[in-house]
Amino acid sequence: MAALSAYIKTITALTIFSALACMLMPDGSFRKYVELVLGVLVLTAVLNPFLGIFGTDQVHMELGVLQNQVRLEKNFFSAEEYEEMEQQRVTAAYGQVLQDRVKEDLTQKYSDIEWVDVTFCEDSTDENYGMIEGIAIGCANEDAKKIQTYAAKRYGLAEEAISVEK
Image (tube, rainbow, N blue to C red; front, side, top):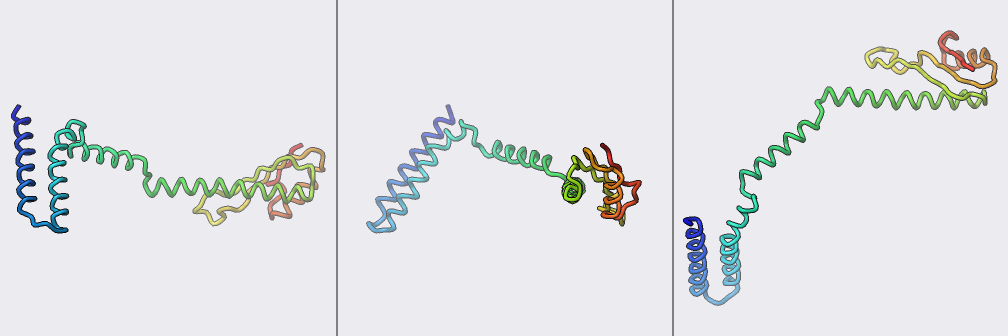
């Protein structure tokens, strides 16, 4: 009941204050601005309890901001995790491009190539990083030995590093 009484007293005091301020102000362009400011004050005083009912008080807003910040921090990766994930993506993309190009190259020479699987050095600290280590080739009817010899010469590998499967 005390809160309701304070609410009514505040609205009454602001209304009387704004009426007196408007009476004391001379006519002119400045009067419009004073009426606007006083109107906003009265409106704020009237709406303040209703805003409190709907839960927009400052404590809840700050708590919500902190909870969102914690959620965002959980979703972000550390620099090391991000670097590792990026390295995996780059390696996977490089492997796919390498495999597609080798298959395209071999298919131009031998039309019966069905699939190609390329293995390469994936250790980024190794000096041979990205170098082809072996190739597995699937073909239908071509001569396996000719394909193996061609691929070994073409990619600078030993013939043992090339496997051809029918």
